[in-house]
Length: 223
Image (cartoon, rainbow, N blue to C red; front, side, top):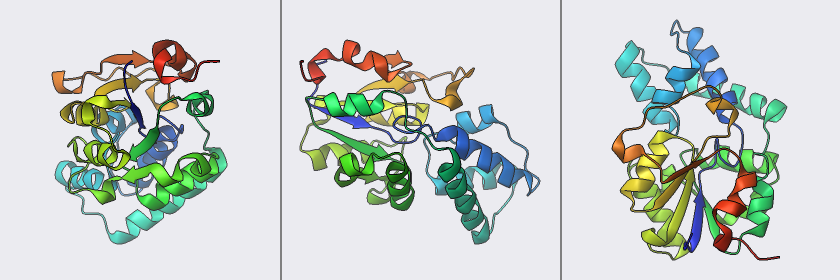
């Protein structure tokens, strides 16, 4: 691999959360008369921050949702996470065996990122190296968040490997000048084929973190 720092996205990469988030959003919007499905969520919302999602809904459906909608959605999401959030298979073993530094760069709010990672037992490992879209001017697909994370970790962009699930995140990593691998093993990716424009094509795709040590042997501690 020849990389000195691994930057993980959070939702859909470290935690199998995107399917829960999508279902909660689909349900909440249906109550407001907006009918969308999982492929729509994957195409338009995956990897994007809440304000960007709301702007898309406003533009496409002419629906200006009240502040109470966000509170209701986040409360549903919290309950959904408490009931069913799981760490992505094999990701803990990969983090424990990395021979290079790693961090997290996520579009989630700081509160949601901390809550999610605490629920699956990763906050203790990564909490001091979690960077969120609230810390930069522009969220993904702009490169700002990945560039900020690399700077905070002390690495040049070309020395970083980004692990992303969304095309939005892949595009952001490419714009940052980083190597990017797309993880396709989340529950939300089952049966979905997302067509990628050139700027959102990953350098590699993989479906399980059980493959990571084989794909990036020089990033792992040698037994």
